[in-house]
Length: 231
Image 1 (cartoon, rainbow, N blue to C red):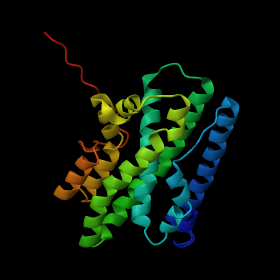
Image 2: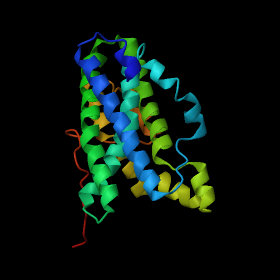
Image 3: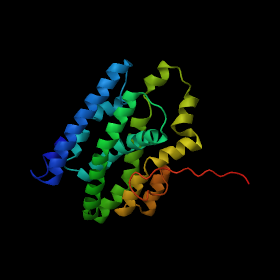
Image 4: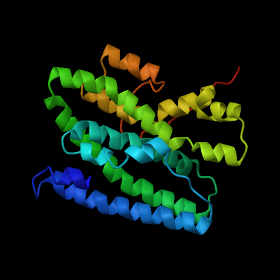
């Protein structure tokens, strides 16, 4: 985001927002690190490949801002969706965990909202070829980054000797797990519909990535489970 800020005029909404969001993301890093320090458990972090390429990703913000902000949503939507579900359930959580999640959800709402509005304004100005290529790449970006963020690293499964079959069942082998994966991206599918990025080939790509489904009616729409009982 700081890299992107250097590409936009000083004083513009994008410039001011990127500086503001960079400050908040630094605060999030400090908040999460403090929580990890207090828990005392080792956190391996991102997969090794993503760690290697992570210094290069911010450099795309200037020349390719639209794909970059879709990448921002790919990094924020899964965690935001998961944390909102946990908070909405109302189950008893450790006070530190509950407070950290509440702060993160409140502040991420600004970041996600800005990315949605930015893309709504910028995507229609792309030419037809750019929009078509973007429509095919958006579901790939979503699935790859979601996999890297949501699924624990290999060292986690090795440390606790968890069978591969259990890993596949949780991520995302059962019907419930596959539905949860799809639900993470309802807001992004809505955005793609609104910006003309949901063409037939794009729908096929969403299906191949196993994150297809109906779009949200509005941002952060709760997932409503319909229970059917026998008469």
